[in-house]
Amino acid sequence: MAHILVIYEIHKKSIKKVSFEATSAAADLAGKLNGTVSALLIGHDIQNLAKEPGNYGAGKVFVVDDPKLEKYSPDVFANITAQAAKEAGATHLFMGASATGKDMLPRAAFRLDSSLAQDIIGFETEGGNVIYKRPIIAGKLHARVSLSSQYQLATLRPNVFAVTEKKVDAEVVKFSPEIPAPRAVVEEILVEEGGKLDVTEAEIIVSGGRGMKGPENWQLIENLADVLGAATGASRAVVDAGWRDHAEQVGQTGKTVSPNLYIACGISGAIQHQAGMSSSKYIVAINKDEEAPIFNIADYGIIGDVFDILPKLTEEIKKLKSQ
Amino acid sequence: MNIGVCIKQVPDTETRPKIADNGTEIQKQGIKWIVNPYDEFAVEQALQLTENDDGEVTIISMGPADIEPSIRGALAMGAQKAIRIDTPASPDDQLVIAKSLARVLEDKNFDLILFGKQAIDDDAAQVPQMVAEALDLPCATVVVKINLEGNKATVEREIEGGKERLSFSLPAVIAAQKGLNEPRYRSLKGIMQAKKVPIEVVTAEAHQGNVKIEKLQYPPQKQPGKIVGKGPEAVPELVRLLHEEAKVI
Ligand SMILES: Cc1cc2nc3c(=O)[nH]c(=O)nc-3n(C[C@H](O)[C@H](O)[C@H](O)COP(=O)(O)OP(=O)(O)OC[C@H]3O[C@@H](n4cnc5c(N)ncnc54)[C@H](O)[C@@H]3O)c2cc1C
Ligand SMILES: Nc1ncnc2c1ncn2[C@@H]1O[C@H](COP(=O)(O)O)[C@@H](O)[C@H]1O
Image (cartoon, rainbow over all chains, first blue to last red; front, side, top):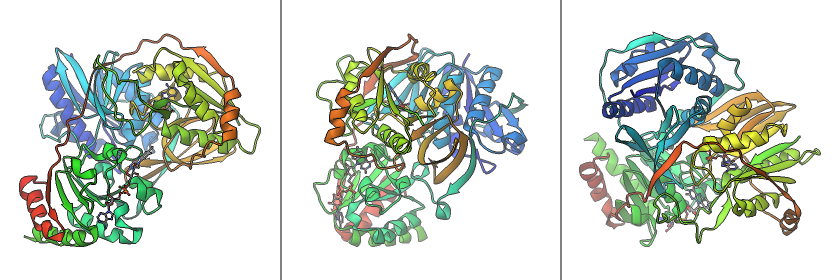
């Protein structure tokens, strides 16, 4: 019988949203497979979080709580994950495709001698068999893949699977695996100033390109982002020019994003840029060139000068929000 | 210090891939093949780290003879040696690739094994981590900064909204992200020299893959939407549409 184990990601003693997304997706899949869902929480001093997975359909919560796990080590967490998969009798392992999930789960897959579908955006079942859907070649194609290894592992792209409440009375199980000495540990997390929202986690992104003319004009992008509670993104042209940090780059050699709303300001929409953002639910393009390829994929476009339009847009949205 | 760099040949980023008749592969004709862009950061890093000692850089790539142009492309940047692990096609299961690479890497005693963070064709982002597990080595991925002191490494990797600093000792596996360095251009001399380097060919062990591509599909095409209007006069209507029609603000 299918038993999906969801590996939780805990940051500063709170659970990341991707973990709830993964649990909701697992509950959905378990429903189709007549299976069950469990959660795995690893860390130190995390007992108080153990009830939360039950809000999204996890019937059992395995908690590994140990002072040795205060600092995150990808190899130690992968090792524990593999032990927990065996202990729990899991058949599937799910985790959010965050920076941590994408780094850690392949290690657990190796330890389980099993295969992994990274960064999936959907799944379906075919007679008890799961078909995972994942973008390849920077989203230019979608592959439907099936896994025939003993365990099936998948990371789920953030912001794609909805968090759905499904309260169950979760049983909390204390699990005490062998904790190996770490090969590598995270010594420190360097947070971007102001604790900026990352493009991969944002529901709205305001992105600027070469049409913004220079870094001194980014205030226009930031003001609009502020009223929307959005993250700021950038094209490669402006990152290469040193106007913005690479962490903001969207596209084939930057980040792949799928927000509810992507506002492209002064971005031409080169194929490599589209590769990173074309799966956004709604795309708005502001560009003075009506032939710009970005208009081919935009839901709404305004032809015009970003320097006239952005201040007006910020003002109109402020007005709407204050109503 | 001796460094191994694993590279993959992938379609150029300009490629608009077409699905082959069998529905599970891309059409190979007409594709321009390149060294995976992230792997170029790895090659560059290896060259910089060995510049001032007598260490060597070895390129390792798994695939059929068709991938040799990319191997030569990496050699042309300045690497000294190359190994090709022969397979009829690059496997769809990264676990298979990782096991085959690990088998070749294990007795080379490299001080450092470098990868790209992700191959831009399968976008799997898993081979480096799996190789590290196979060889029982420390590993960091999506790395934008490397600092070595003796055999102690401190690296920074990109995470959401910031960076993580990890430390570990060599030998280790590191997977490169853009921002780590600026890959050098290949000089004509480098290209000529690369032609003379023998590529050692080894046979891949037979591992059974467990990933099956059932079907490739084009993503749902986004229909070009509407041009709301020209200039700032169009803004109120745009805001109305985003609020009432799309319901995203
Ligand atoms: C290997 C490789 C990888 C790549 N990876 C990426 C990637 O990850 N991400 C990425 O973005 N690109 C990537 N690129 C680069 C890509 O090909 C484009 O060069 C880049 O996206 C262009 O950025 P841009 O749209 O900001 O600039 P441009 O193409 O110069 O476009 C600027 C746009 O601004 C408009 N404009 C100018 N002034 C105004 C104004 N006042 N008001 C309104 N509009 C104005 C212009 O009409 C134009 O459409 C990659 C390229 C290669 C070869
Ligand atoms: N067939 C291969 N041969 C050599 N190295 C590879 C191969 N496939 C992947 N790699 C390496 O592993 C990295 C990540 O690839 P992937 O896990 O497929 O996204 C690449 O950037 C390469 O450095």
